[in-house]
Image (cartoon, rainbow, N blue to C red; front, side, top):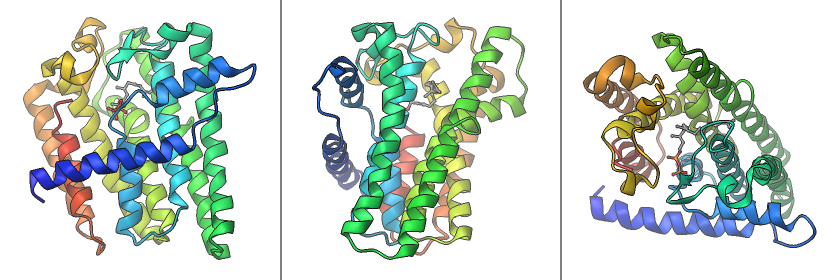
Length: 307
Ligand code: GRG
């Protein structure tokens, strides 16, 4: 796919995702208005919208049709955003900038930062559950209902203690102990903290489109590679990136003595690993019959991104 064509499509797709997201935002009214404002502030702060895009593209690749994907697209962005809101808190990374603007806790105060994250996580499930209503409206069959239930299982598991929360826990503890991590431990953190939500996104897309168990497993492996490569690239950018382009501070890993794939293996080996993982991800993608030119280019661009 030509670079220009890809960029134009990307812009259009991000705008479509933002429209979907807007349609699920809570209305900022009532005595709890402040937390609703804080939720919407963090959700609409920009960002690449990568996870809903991966979800929608995977859904399309497996021939998915209808609106059932939309509540899940909004839900994954809410879960991802909650994780960023909490990660920025003083008790965690104590960050002041994110997505090119002040972090949620910095604007609304620490207590509201905690609540906004909690609220986004809970509201993500309320939103995803709306897929059952969509199904009823679209008069789909019982098997589609079970696909929604299966997608909810994946959503809950990959975001939870056996997914992102598990990865974040081990990461925080490892940082506090200042012990040298081995390759297996670094991979545990990357797989759970970062790859889990990428896996969730692509697996939910496949499941809702009616993909079989074998295909969903292959998608999980493909997304694992994408997630690990994405994280290594994130660590590379923390060393060589530009803070203006990234919309956040760079050099924070070194400053916090944080061990990453890059601090352990060096820039050159890390870049080679990104290359190898992305090649394997594309190989898996090419085993699927469905049209996936945009998805393939998206994965390659993400992995080789500068911001
Ligand atoms: C608080 C449970 C909990 C988890 C926090 C998300 C996270 C886990 C930590 C943030 C720091 C980090 C390096 C996470 C790895 C995943 C990652 C690179 C997130 C940033 O995702 P992008 O680049 O962000 O897609 P945008 O802003 O574009 O959506």
